[in-house]
Structure formats: structure tokens, C-alpha cells
Amino acid sequence: MLNSLAGPALRAGLDVLAVGGRFIELGKRDIYADTKLGMSPFKRNITVSSVDLDLVLRTKPDLACTLLSEVAEELTAGRLDSLPRKEFPLEQAADAFRLMAAAKHIGKLVLTVPASGSTVAVVPEGTVPIAHSDGAYVITGGLGGLGLEMAKWLGGLGAGRLVLNGRSAPSVHTEEVIAELRAAGTQVEVVCGDVSAGDTADRLVEACGPFRLRGILHAAAVLDDGMVLNLDRERVEKVWRPKVDGAWHLHSAAEGHDLDWFVLFSSGASMFGNPGQGNYAAANAWLDAFAQWRHHRGLPALTVNWGAWGEAGRATGFKDRGFSTLSTKDGIDALTTLLDHDRVRTGVFAFEADQWFGMLPSALESSFFAAMPRSAAGDTPAAGGKVRAELVELPAEERRRFMIDYLAGQIRVILGLSSASVDADVPLTNLGFDSLTALQLRNQLEADLALKIPATAVWTHPTPAALGDHLIEQLAL
Image (cartoon, rainbow, N blue to C red; front, side):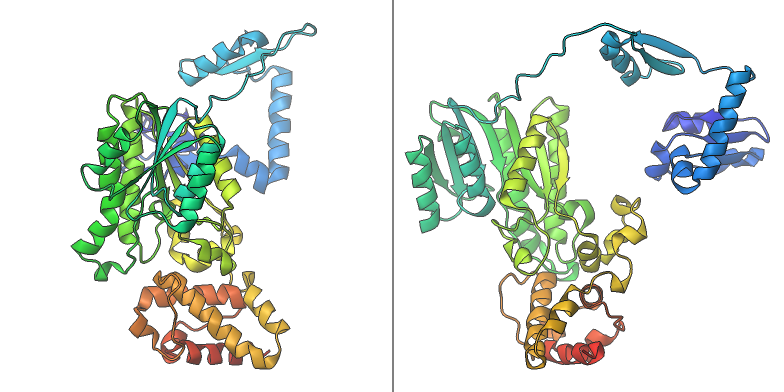
């Protein structure tokens, strides 16, 4: 039996296979989804094989050429019949695609192209505007960082009124941006308050005034990173409430309003995890599911699993430490594209394999990156070496200070210490290092220094200063 069906249909095919039968899987969906398959069909001595012609073409081109030649020869000689097909004139291509999408066809769908003729192509006039002069747009977390960039973006698109929310009063810089927006013709209302509190979302909607509420952008967030063993209910709720309760209150307050869009700022942490951010990943995973929930009810919803932004927001320090990050322009362009295409959930982040898998070695084992070849994932210690190259260029007397500063930066990233200073003589265990974070640091060091480092190095050289001296010695520059 040849099979290209997925899901329950695949299992049904196995169940009707005769004793000693052969089942050849041509589809890919269940294979790449790692779908579970029960063993009971095998009691009938069946054989199951899979054939991926794309893989044959990539890995064994000579074999692929031979197979295609043999099939062509058999077809030419009439010993093989062509597959069943249904033909559509080119101008009926839309009907063909609809039939294919409904999966009601047998065999192949073929578009026929006439030898001559002409047709008129209709060019789309443009996408639906994201912002309108008669519209009001609510932005939580809108008084700083990414929220303020979103306000500038919507103001530039002609939004009539912006309602900006934050827990604290606007800073001097924020007031300056608000003044610029007002001078350009956008009305701006500031509503201070915790969006996780019940009445704040209602006040945000009321602040839209006579303008029609057209869009909500939920970018409020609070971080309180720590290993799972160190998280208690209070620390989980501190991160959970602004994201989850805030989103739900906004949903409830906007009931009855005909929104154009409802955007939720989620995080890549809910896609592939991040050590020390279990509470943050959980809150963002709820947002991801909430967007799907709204979508299934016919309500607009988009959740974006953002990576680090390098020019605004909480993660700008990553750029300073040499990590690839999103520019503000790239992030806004991505958000515009997602809204244009009516997406529900998408991850957007700058990706460099050696950085990602050095900091998150466990990600290689996740289903998210399962299809990535190990060679593309920078799976060898010598794949990086950028910090080593910088050390080589420094005078010998400056290398120790550079190494200690570099280690302090990596420690801050791993422990989520933001801009807090790291004493070079304080043991890493006192800062909160455990076996997981020690492994994370070791993998990053191996990538950046192109150096094989023993698993015990972080414990046998327990302070940043001691570890830095050891690493410089091992580099033998």
C-alpha cells in the first residue's frame, strides 16, 4: 500500500493491511510532527517503509537520476499508466486551488496553458491600513521601551488617538515623544495604572473618547527571573498577572467593539524555553493559546514570539554584548507584515546558530529545532571563537581585564541580572549558579573562545577572576 494520507487516515491504512503486507509512507506530515504510532498493526507481520524523494534528490542525486530515467522509459513504452488527473484552464487556477485545499480530488490537478492568448492581471491596490484617523489605539506598556516605539509607529501611520498605559508616570524622554506626537496631529492620552487590576482596562477603553476603538497592543511585562526551585507563588504571579490578567481584562473591556486587530507581545521563551525564565515562558505560552482562542471565536488576534530587540526595550544589553538582535525597523516591518497577512502566531527573532545553541544547548533537543542539521547548529566548540580573536588583538596586560568583563557580561545574561555589577571575587554559587547555569556558561565559553573546557572548570575555578585567569592560561595566547 502506498500512502500519503496523514493523521487517523494513516492509522486506518495500517489497520486494513493484509498479513505480510507492505506499507510505504510517501507523506511527510506525521514524520516531521513525530506522530506516535501504536505497535498493534505489526502483529500481522507487516513491513513499514518511508520514501522521501526530496531527501533522495539531495543526498543521492545519481540514484534519483537513475530512478527518473527508468520511470520515463516505462511511461514512454506504455508499460506504466499516468496518474489520474483533472485539468483546469489557467484562468480557472483559483478553482483548482480550492479543490486541492478541500482535498476532494483523486490523482493530480493540472493547469493547462494555451499556446497563445492574453489575459488581464489585477494588481492589488494595497493592504488594509493598520491605523486610521478616526481610530483610537490602546497600548499597554506604552510609556517606555517597545511600547513607546509602537506609539511612534502608529502615530506615523495616521492614528487619530493613542491611549498609552504604564504603571508609573511618564519619564522626561517619554513626555518629549508624546509632545512630538501631539505636534504631528495625533491625540495622546496617558492612563497610569496596573493593567492586571480590574478597572484599568475599562479606563483605557473609556479614554478613547469619541474615537472608535480599532486596535489594542498588549506589551506590558514584568520580569522576575530565577531557577524553578527558587520560584514561589508570589514571584510567579508577579510575572503572570501583567501578561495574563492584563490580556483578559483588555479582552473583556473591548467586548462589543469592532476591533481591526488585537496584538499580544509574547516571547521566544514560550517557543523553545529559556533557563531561569520558567514563569515568563509560562505567561507568554498562555498569551499564545489565548490568541488561538480568540481566533477560533472569529475575533482578531495576533501573538508575536519576539526575540531580543537591540535598540529599545529590556533586552538592549544583548546587542552591547555582541548578540544578534532585531533592529526597531526590522521589528516594525515584521509586525506590519504579520498584520497584513492576518497571522495568529509567529516567532520573530534574529538567529545565529552558534550564539543560540551556545546559550541554550537544550534547545537542540527540542522538537522546534529537530529538523535542523547539527552542522548548521554550530555543534562543535570550534565553531565560534569571536572573543578569542578579540583577545589575540589585545596587549597582554589588557587581556585579564577584558576576560573578566566578558565573563561578568555572560553571567549577567545567564542569571538575568540586567545591568547589575558582578564582583570578580564573589563565588558563582553565591550569585545563584547551579549545575544547569554552569553548563550554560561552559557552552557559551566554548563557542566564544573556540576552546574545549572541562565540565568541572566552573567549580574548580569558582570566581570570575579565577575562571578568567584559568581560561587565559588555557588559551596560551
